[in-house]
Image 1 (spheres, rainbow, N blue to C red):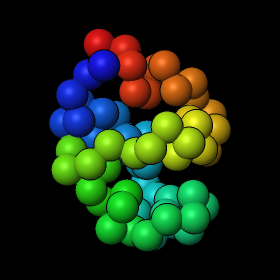
Image 2 (cartoon, helix red, strand yellow; image 1 turned 90 degrees about the horizontal axis):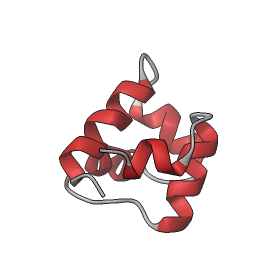
Image 3 (cartoon, rainbow, N blue to C red; image 1 turned 45 degrees about the vertical axis):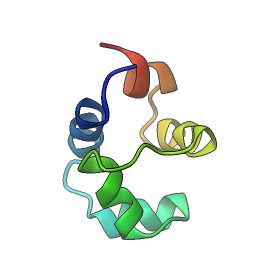
Image 4 (cartoon, rainbow, N blue to C red; image 1 turned 90 degrees about the vertical axis):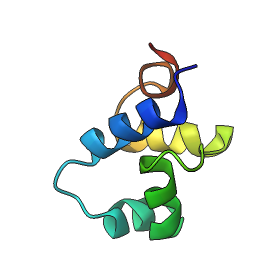
Length: 67
């Protein structure tokens, strides 16, 4: 699995022009959680990885596991 920093950069890129608040609302989490994922401070739970992948219309593998 890539490190949290790499995953965080991917998540930032996928978010694009959306705010962290918009993504958080869509996923049912706080903007702080989105910020922590994007800054590499935390990794989302497995269930949340599935929700994130569906939200961005990508696979969990592409976002969280490719090198």
